[in-house]
Image 1 (cartoon, rainbow, N blue to C red):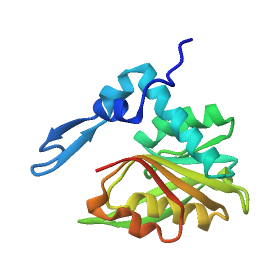
Image 2 (cartoon, helix red, strand yellow; image 1 turned 30 degrees about the horizontal axis):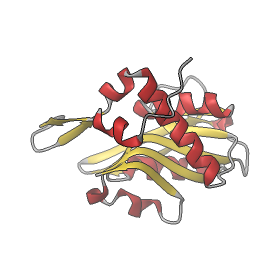
Image 3 (cartoon, helix red, strand yellow; image 1 turned 120 degrees about the vertical axis):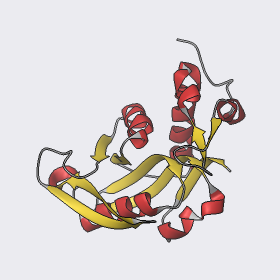
Length: 181
């Protein structure tokens, strides 16, 4: 197995492409799929996230991740850290009893769910997602974890769109983003 330690975060960022007018006109979508398609670059991002958690002294026993792209980084990182993986899903996708939180969108509401038995009281949980934009989804995930008795130890993102101020919704939670626009 070859080492990816020579790959920089800038190298990874260079593989993120802009897709204009997706998913709707006026939006510039940050498409991470070219970076994911490169095994060494994807592996490097997971290693950088792992190193970040270690260097910041973040203690956790599980990662919680919203679908769908949070699953990509969360499952790989959970495996590397040898901690649990907790899927946070849209309504009706989990087979057992769930906790849920409804949250506001620009036009309407949405809901995230997690199994009742996913978190132990006081358990430190790290939230992982690919992108921090307006912050609504990850704020709902943090509230869901806390309502279930867990403690949000940190929130980690590959990309943050700083101009949307999503970080503001996360209050005192520790927030780390690898790439900022």
